[in-house]
Each structure stands twice: as C-alpha cells, then as structure tokens.
Amino acid sequence: MSWKIWALKKSIWVYHVNVGACNNCDIEILELLTPRYDIERFGMVLVGSPRHADALVVTGICTHQAVPRLQEVYRQTAKPCVVFCIGTCANDRGIFKAGYGSPTPADEAIRAVDPRAIIAYVPGCPPKPEAMIAGVVKALAAL
Amino acid sequence: MREMGLALLVLFGATLATAVLGLITRFIDRKVTARVQWRVGPPWYQTFADILKLLGKETLVPGLAKGTLFLASPVLGFAATSVGATMLWSHALGLGFAFFGDIIVLVYVLTIPSLMLVLGPASSGSPYGAVGASREMKLLLGYELPFVLALAVALIHTGGSLRIEDIVAGQARHGAVIGSVSGVVAALVSLVCIQAKMGLVPFDMAEAETELMGGILVEYSGPPLAVILLTRAMLYAALPMLLVTVFLGGIDLRGLGIVWALLKYLAIVVLMVLMRNTNPRLRIDQAVRFFWGVLAPIALAAVALAAYGRARGIPWL
Image (cartoon, rainbow over all chains, first blue to last red; front, side, top):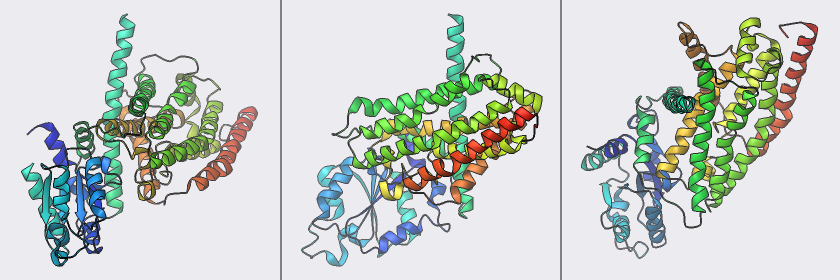
C-alpha cells in the first residue's frame, strides 16, 4: 500500500452535496459528528469547499436543476475522491423513480462526467449512522 | 562558506522541528477540543496524515486565478514562517545568530504569512476568497498595534534592548516580565493577538466555514493547501515560543530547562485551545473595534505603567 493511499484512508475530508433531499439523510449525516458516533476518530471531518474534499456525500433524488451543479461540484473536487450516495433517493430515486423532476440518478450524473468514478451506495430512508460508517469502511477497503 | 552551510543546516533543522512540534500541537488542539465537546477525537498521527494526504492530491488552479501569485503566496508564507521559527530556535539553542533589532525583524517576518494569506486568496478569482482576504487584512491591521505595544512592555522591563538575547538575559536578572502587573496585562493582550494571528476562533472570520466556506482557503487544494496548513501548524509552535521567550523568561533547553520550557509552552497552548472552545466567532467590525478600542488602550496603559515603574524603580509595576 503506497503512502498516498494510506494517508487518504486515514484522513477523509467530506463535502456534503444536497441535490434535492428531504433533509432526513442530512440530519443523519450530522449525527455522525456528534459524541455518540464521532467520525473524527477515523480522521473524517466536514469541510466547506469541494476543493478540500476527498469524499462527496450526495443526498437526494438529483433533481433536473441539480444535475449540472452536481457535475460541476464533482469536477471541482481534487482527485482522487470517492462519492457516497447516501439514502434511497440518491441510490435509485426510490418512490420518485417515475417522477418528471428527477430524470437522472445521482450516480449516472457523476458517471457522465467521469466514467471511472468510485461510487459507494448506502441505502435506507434514512440510513442509520452505523450503516453509513459501514459503507465508508467498505468503500475504503476497495481503494 | 562554512558559516553559510551551518546557517542552512540550522534553517532546515529548525523548520523540521517547528513543523513536527506544530503538528503535535495541532493534534493536542484537536484532541482537547474533542474532549471539551465530549467526543473521543482523532488518533495521534492525524495531523501528519492530513498533510501527507494533501501532498498526494491533485493541484487545482481556478480558471479566473492569477496562477503564479496564487501558488507562490503559500510558499512565501511558509518560507517566512521558517525564518521566524529559525530565529527563535537558534536563540533557544544558544547558537549566537543574534543581531541588533532581531525582535523587530521577527515581528515583521511573522506578519508575512498573514499578508500572503491576503495576496493568494485575493488572486484566486473567487468572491469568497476575496471577502476572506479583505477580512484577513482588516484583522491584521487590528491586532498588530496592541501586539507591538504588548511587546514594548517587555522591552521596557528588560532594559530597552532590541535583541532577543538581551530580553531573555534581562529576565534572568530581574525575573520574568510576567512577574509584574504590566507584564501580566501585556502577556494577556499578546495572547489574544496571537489567537487572531493564527485565525483561531473567535477570530476565524477570514475562514468562517459556515458563511464563507473556508474563505481564504476556499480555492486551495492538494499540495498548496498542505503548505498553508503546515504554515499554520508551524505558527502554532512559533508564536507560543515567542510569548515564552518574551514574557515567561525564555526557552532554556539545557538539563531540566527542557521540562520548564515545555510546561510554559503547554500552558500557553492550553489557554489558546480553551479560548477557542469557549467563544463564538466575532464579526469583523466587532473584532477590529475590540482590538483598537479595548486592547490597544489596555496595552498602552500597560506601557505607561511599565515606564512609570521603571522610572521610579518599582519592579512589580
């Protein structure tokens, strides 16, 4: 394992992209920062700019308007980076699958920019914080 | 030629020592913060892993940025911090690189990192960077005056010499500057000033993650960001060292002196961390008003008190 990969795994900085979520997943993500879960134990912190980020945490159905913005945020992120699709909406749009407002799932929008993007999926409505941590662990093991 | 080589060796060693000490201090800061918030906090190697990771990432330069200035300013800030730290270390190790007026040079050199954090973001082409840069500039104008006045108190107490060596020697003769009334006031004022110099809460309005999304840092990524964070960490080591040197009787690294030096250093760091954890962020106008309207008069009063005490021969004033 090279030093780059080791350091990346030990220090994941997260940028949170909401592309049309109902705020339920967002609250559960913030739960990860609280004393009960405290993901800073693993070196993960929330950052304010995609330029600093190693992981994009995408929540929501990816509305028609959000597609180009999500793609732009992905382009602005310094590579290598990982994308986490958190919640049923970001995975396969859930009950909004047939809706006219969400033509593209989040992962397809990102694959349109970078076909080799690393995307991890955490299903649930909303997923439990434990599930998110498990998802991160699995994604990092695949790096 | 040999002296040149020795100076370079000291510069390299001091930079490395300051970086390691600074990153450890940064870890202490994060760990204490986590404990204050009832969390567990990061492992000990966290700050080193952060820097390593950023060095391994991609460097992005925004299309609107003036690329040269944007990328050169973090490096210049880093260089200035190394020079300042080297002056402090060479004094602590008794290497005798002292010269007349080196305290002025030191204060001057330690402003350059802040200036570079104005220039770089201002050339990034991002409005968030521009707002952050303007706030950093105002903050710089705010804290420099009380900081210099507070240092003047120490100069008056130690006989008015502008050499770091003489300041420490004066304290060895008459007791540390902080053993007097004006010394305590000046030390507290300069503690608040270095808090602002490093952009820690309550003076992090230039960064302001919740409103400016990182402000001055917003467009930096990868290695340049690593250099900025390393510079910050080095300041976290160098500025408390400066305070120990000027107010707390200096750094003596011989024998038991190491323990003493470490204790003084840690006392200042813990005070800074607690200040950072118990205060909300000020607005920039509040901060400037605080520095010019409150701290500068207090520091001026301390200068007057120290001068009076010196003229009348009352050492505790």
